[in-house]
Length: 42
Image: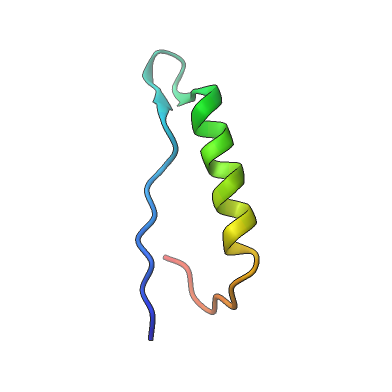
């Protein structure tokens, strides 16, 4: 079993969203995770 801990991208608290850097971080993470065979996600 392998456990991955993932945090959210850089937040933009003023707009309750992510910063441009945070969106890019999320995109990069999605690219990496799609290559894994993930069975469960919590």
